[in-house]
Image 1 (cartoon, helix red, strand yellow):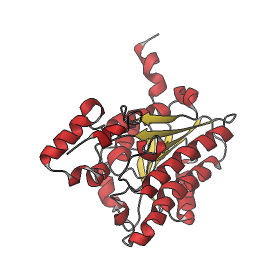
Image 2 (tube, rainbow, N blue to C red):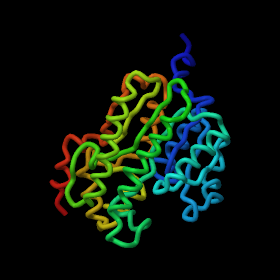
Image 3 (cartoon, rainbow, N blue to C red):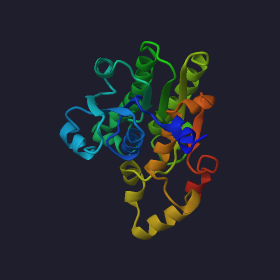
Length: 273
């Protein structure tokens, strides 16, 4: 057996991957990782909010990348996104439901505080549900992979001081994953959820780190598992493995990717400024 034989299961040549919300953070790391391993990536953006020309420039070194508008609050937009990708590629092998909002970013999408909880559910929970339903309704294709990105907060454990609808919507994604996995256990599709912990993204910066002084930030980071943030590329590596044929044994898994925060959530409340 050659070295190539050992690593070939991880190549994604010819694999069509749809990644939502992939213009930054974990999503961007997924785009770069999967494209580097040969996948053709269909990437979504929010029309009239994100500029596709700027996004294209971000990924100028990726050859097989196409952009598609997507509004997770609009069923017709979701259906249109799938239809456009199928028209271009003929099929979709992997869906990575990465797009979502959090406690600190919901205001970017809804300025009225009275409507923010509803929009949080519309995007994180109902939007993900509709994406899953449309993906699973596509014509049969062997060894499809459905990967939902949830969060350690809600998907694994509960943390105080975060918006209730944030954790509830991420918990809904984890439950949806279990439900769909149960229903597809005899089908040629694998369903997973990944629940990242404190990750070095603009969203976590906005929700937590931006509120701290330099000294407070250093103390906060030193109290996290492994005394550091998770890097988006580390989550992307998990997404990569789940996109490969070898991942079938993990069908139905809700993966705690928090370096231990999920099993010791008190680390955040133990922290004292």
